[in-house]
Image (cartoon, rainbow over the protein chains, first blue to last red):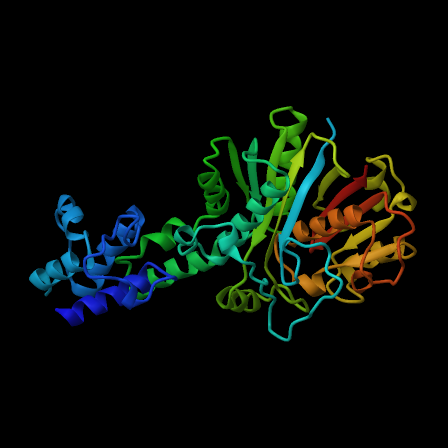
Length: 85
Length: 325
């Protein structure tokens, strides 16, 4: 799980071009869409949906669940662990 | 209504941003010119910057700089000329489509691959809901944007217009250009030039802009429309790519005895390089002098009242005339 979270942080930095972030700057429970965390926005949410499908083969069928799944790296990793193919 | 250039700036292969006409210039051994990147974070927050490709960064930073210089928060219109648009994002988007069998392209590349992304991003940053237009007319893209701005002001629909030209050059684009046998004997480049046109009087007056789609320019006839003869021109900013560029033979002959400035060998050739040339013309009038390195024929100007910008690529020509006020 710890390996997955580090991998996920690296992929988020690369995919979302988070130029000012290193993997070590992101805590597992940092909010992704909050100014106190990574301050991502709706386009980033789309990018994460694409990343989940492309990298882990997980299709987000119910967009309403997106908000809970994408709260933090921890919640994303939990979701991937449960659903990856 | 008279139209003035209230402020101007350019991002180019030379040290032009937030500067006057540089006193030296560098040429490149590379296959094409890339811009000298300014400190973008001075104008754009890191949060927004991370998603912007170089062309958007250059267009936005240059726009915000001229707004800042003009002490203007909101223009009455935003008009941008770009010949080839956001090519890096387009290339990334199309490459992904091919490599991933038309599935799961990344949204950012797709969203930002359109030509009007730059004008749109500027409007979003300024929360500007006024007239917003992008013109793409190959080597006359900037001139078309400038004409539109001029008409908008002459119709008294705007008093302050943000207008500019911007293009980018990547390795992929360069290879395509060479495959298509374009820009032979010239070095391609990239850059941005932006201006605030205003009805408020300032030292540089935009006398006119003319797009000419003919085999050659009849300078005497064209200048007559502005009530001038070739002898009235004090400085020419010519688009010669090299010393004996045949596209500019007539201009060199006609204006051989006055100060003839050239820019393409140091800025590169691209669809909106004339925006950089207009920025140079503006600086020549504002600073009332020209560093020696830019003067092709070695003739120093004896007073600067009328500055003529000439751009020719194939049968696409343009003239822009500035007057010192």
